[in-house]
Image (cartoon, rainbow, N blue to C red; front, side):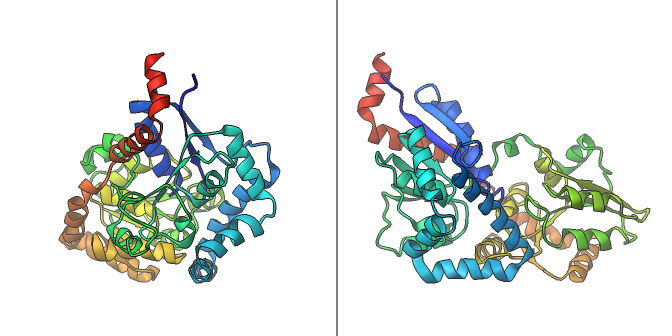
Length: 390
């Protein structure tokens, strides 16, 4: 008899959708992979469906466009709120790239999963519209669900209580189909020491300099360039780790900058040591997004340097006003002024650091992995019984 098939489809629309999915996939596969058939794939790559792959490219390009043009980002998210779930879903999934939704559903039917765990609304849409509809679980990595995330799913998960409380106001949500779960931080975060000096030693960073990591999302678009241009000219005992992500052109530009003798400057492309660099830092700088969860996990204060969309604004405000581990400052000169103040008086960062540490228990993927299994047991008892008796 066949095994229950559980699909974890990756969607690149910024890295904030990929990292949570990989996190829960790893835990679920480790705990339950011997009982079910677990599949993880990049949903828009090598599908054999040209329109579907074009839709995936569009998602990436939209994220880049929003980072380059904040008005466009705000307009898109405001329009989504104005038109509501049904019209926004039709406009995004059906109208933008005609025919891609048909191919997306067809590809999902080719895979034929019994359960689909999505961290992006597109794959949830495809699963929901299959002829043989699977059990759908959708995790929203944002603070507040936008209307696209409010498309039907059998179970919707949120990690931030303000968004959970807002969702509970809608009649469509109840204790059975909406759950509050810990934030799905990357599992490797738990393997990294919280001691900054040991991390600096491992990365060959100066141990006695104030250390900052700057990252403007996976595509290096934002205030990263201007911050580095100005900070590298300062005569400060400072280590700057500039993470350009997939923006190789920016990395090459930054690598050619003249740097004052007091500053240690390390421009990086896409790195698998991102969490180690963050954990070695005194301060994190970057535009709002789910990346802010990572310095917060390590007890590192953040300066949020920009909001590209209302989604990012909501995330930023959550860490500024609720967690209180972050500062909002969009002006580069003011950011540099704050850094100087923190170098001269590190105690100014203590309240933000303590608030970040206090939030540490709100992380982890095991609860969600166990919840997925709980729903499988409820939904497919006969198939599981057959698996056990084989």
